[in-house]
Length: 88
Image (cartoon, rainbow, N blue to C red; front, side):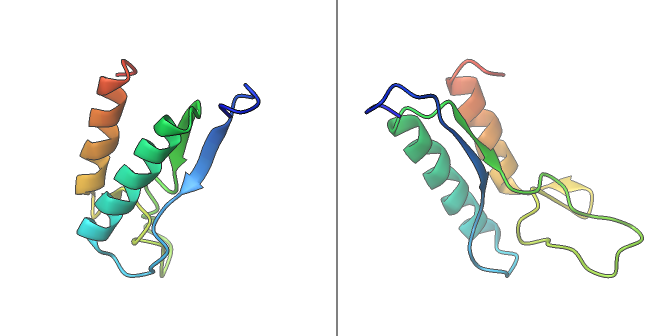
């Protein structure tokens, strides 16, 4: 935190809605990453990189950054953020 100089890592961020919506996921991802940076956090971890499981009858596709074997658009936003921060 910028107030206490205590390192903070934002974990498990994601959209609140349970519908799979690429535009919503992108907005939420960008907002969490940019706000974490602005507040001086060490970083931020998106919830569920990939939640597809062949044996499962259902999964949280709305949070996953991978859908049907392909990256969703928000994954590119995470990659771009990391590149700007020199983390790629």
